[in-house]
Image (cartoon, rainbow, N blue to C red; front, side, top):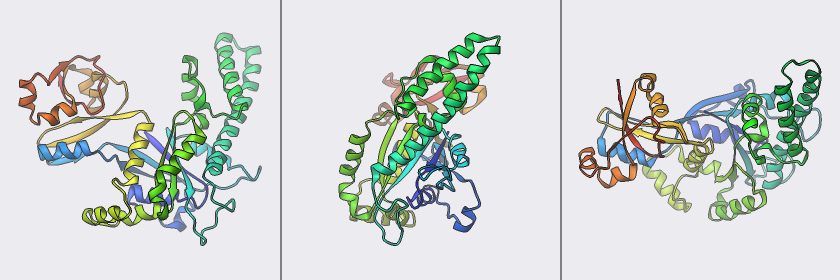
Length: 361
């Protein structure tokens, strides 16, 4: 699963990428690349606690792939346009983090002359809508021609109906994520990857003076947007950059000074993970405690295949216990005695945080 970080120039997106990945980027080299990519651990206090109980040789967090989309620039077509090369690169991501500038800094001028969170959110959203509109209109022209010579007219007619629905939504200046997804949409969403259909996390990059009113700012933006498949989270690039260079003990003191109970960066990563429709299950033991990533709704056999393909092919049963049940009775023997550790078949739908042991042939 891959999440792309996008944003206007000087919004703090590259600072966010560097803080997330602990990778220092050479700014001169940066200008020559299309994107910077890294794998990021998903923070999980449940895995931390399980590791404390089992004291394994190794602890392995779930991960997501983060890409900093480099080189966002105004295009030549219009002042509010971005280059087609950039938009093509963005299309390959499963979801997007849009870093929106909310901090004041006289030494770093805003590309549009002033700080306005909602305006900047709409700027990128509108660009994605216009890009999708251009694609859909082009596709409809091709489909009309195909209909005249196509032998499989039913399939062509079906796609025309889908494209017309998409076009109506886009012409109303609404993103495709607002569309009610029908069975016919799924195939074309997967094939064409429209930009405005992608799940979106709005990361509001606020100033140090905004820590006490971050929730108010977030709620104001949520009230203005009221959209599907969008999450809004605050973060503080300067604070997070300083936190990334401190020891755990120093981090606690630093966060207390700013009135932060949890690193906004950790919340951001978890929000991005959830935005993709992902959840974790755990395998535990003395050798390793690990969080495994699955899509919400996957069954026991599908989930076991994430561990190893043999587990999927030779699946018999899964021993399962809910995370909260285990923490309340923190040994597997106690869980067995109380009947909390149960055997489930291949069709059992895993819950977030389930601890499993796969029985296979």
